Length: 241
Ligand code: ADP
Ligand code: MG
Image: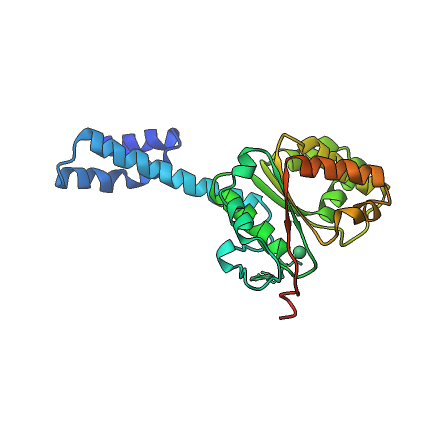
């Protein structure tokens, strides 16, 4: 009876794992003659571990990763040019602590999305709120939100994560409104949160992909690279291989 009461209290306190393992842990404590402090330590640490696991699971679900990619599966010998130590150094995610950006630049199929996904996944594992999107999806969502008065709420989904990955900048041209919306995200996040941007286009071409607005393109590049690292990849497409 006492145990049932205790279980209920734990559940009311949202200590679900403690409630779940209460009986078996009490038994273990009796069998192994554990001190009350040891018993509590087991219960608390199991609760904490389960919570962390749940948090990571939620972060991964909320990050909208189209697939899970890991850096272990990345073959550094495939691209003709890539700075392995530069890329590997990103995976401690200090750049997220420092609110810095990463720009992954290279031709199609060279693993830019793979690396961006791996960084986003690693961030989730480390408990960092992350969001993964494409440039076009970001623009489409913000454009749609202008129509139904949910702009601020939608903008917040792009500004609140500590890490925002924007994939595929440059594949599709964007119109004036699109370019301005994208710029607003970059500008809102500047010095407030990290971005990982992948692009198949050199900086000098960004004007052309942003509605031929060179001023806006320079302002965007300025904000991205001021506290940012450029990772350049060269080589053949892995898809063709
Ligand atoms: P990009 O975004 O540069 O166009 P992707 O990252 O989408 O290229 O890569 C295309 C496919 O090839 C993906 O399935 C990716 O996992 C794989 N890939 C690309 N480069 C590598 C690599 N160096 N090692 C392992 N897989 C790779
Ligand atoms: Mg890609």
